[in-house]
Length: 78
Image (cartoon, rainbow, N blue to C red; front, side, top):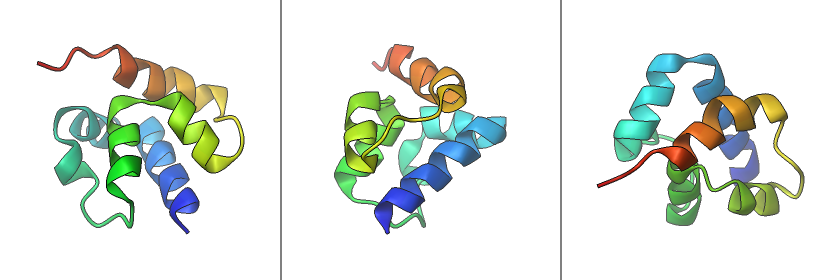
């Protein structure tokens, strides 16, 4: 189920700074091997909390918001 995979990615990013950095800098490589749709990958790589929460059907843990989503959302991508 892709919801479980999304949670797995978020947990991994919160616990593993190397994975988080790869997710932020090269999301395609970081998310390779995870069974996710292109929309899910885009939401995870950009920190789209609204999409993620609507897809999961519940709020994301505040620890993950603080450690993963907010920093991803605030990154400038040029």
